[in-house]
Length: 303
Image 1 (cartoon, rainbow, N blue to C red):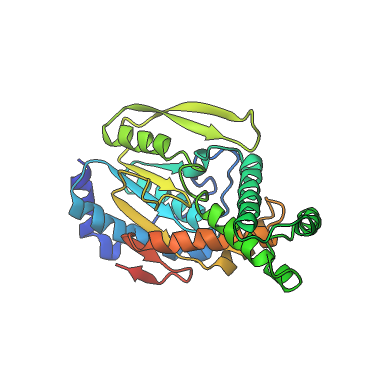
Image 2: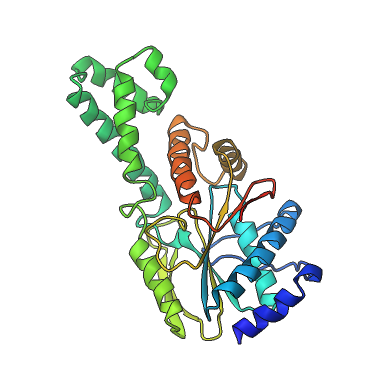
């Protein structure tokens, strides 16, 4: 059935008429999410739609898991909304799954864990390098209060801080986007259940407070495509993805978006800047395995 529909669409793809946008556009299933459709991203989504149709037809499966990943501000949420809308309108039943429901901690506690790892590994690094002292600790106490211990500019006054920051950064690399931070096993359970044809699947919901956790029993009986939208959906730990889409953005664009969104405090702090740099390094590596890569300007970098 799905392959027949894909073949029909493929035959009309050069002249395909996309439906007009509606006021109540679909979006991912993250509680509280709201998506403002940007006109600039509409042609990007239409380009990806055409590439997806060709790739799905060539693969010949009956159900597809498609991942969309990239940094904050790369357009993941809007592109996912548009693709979900276009695919459903084309007769390909699609569900948008937000990976942001699957971290191990709510944002407040996860931010605290990140900072704790950075500082504890930094201190251990000073000990290892023979640079720790009571005077160094007094300096760190003041830098911690100002939240500038991760600021490279502080190393001009305190050269030993370079070792602290380097060890702290390495500690963060072992946490950000890894199994200690994200529950990949549960995501994989959902993807496998979908590919196995389970008619109903329990999906996790996670808000921004500790008591905002629950599961919804979602009907997938007639769903053809599960669209996983998540910064980390290009990670090696995610299993069962058929087609992977990377929306490429720079750390500067990510930082500008976080400041514009202003949902999280300290979006322009030295520590958040470090986190974004590490995440970008991982995104760049994961991008190597993407089937489709689109730049922020809408340029098709792959295929």
